[in-house]
Image (tube, rainbow, N blue to C red; front, top):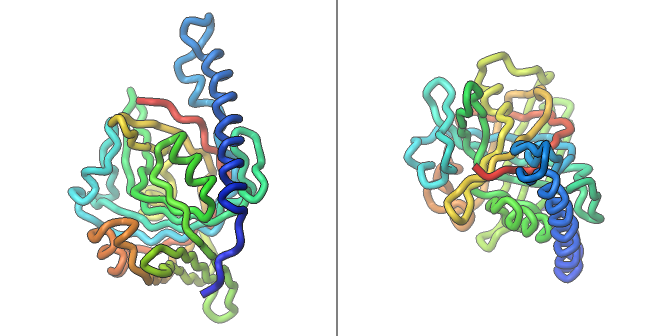
Length: 284
């Protein structure tokens, strides 16, 4: 197991959080003034068109597990419903690289490039004639306390900061190999995925397209409401892969999801990734 890299001290990260939240709320106040319905020409949807985060996502390892819908009932954000593929409901453990990150146009020192691992499921929301297909999160892991704190404060996303490492290798005989690791009080956990051959765009209506092409995020709020935000990126080329998971995640996900991750995934997909844009959320 690789040693986790050194990060800024908690005091330094606390100062960064204060600065990031201060800059963010200043911009939010300016945007609210321009989107106030009392002001002529204001639009209710204006705030959701403002950019919140830009970044590049790379090497998205996706371990996908079919589950009973009842397992997810308590996590479904109000105003959405579970999405399914061919009548099947899925949970995905996703590890990836978060690169060249900017928040509200600001690049934060020591916080541009990092790993993330999240446990997510798939939802949809119908608005008029449009069906918005999105994701909701059970838990998200990052290595920086400042990033986790900002995400919890702004979107009430279920972030936690833990030591993390990643590894990527191009193996002549066995193809591409990626691995994401994190350390909790129960020890190190790791997910890995091996591929062969060349990547390709998913076929329309395929399982791979279902897993990789949900362009909305939904976050359950403390008051029982929901925040909706849009994520923009092109279609990703993907590989089918062989996956492996090791570790005790009961502390992070609870016993049922922890047991689920010990089983063979229904599918394992590696996506190349791309530049992405996350837009400011709006309350439903």
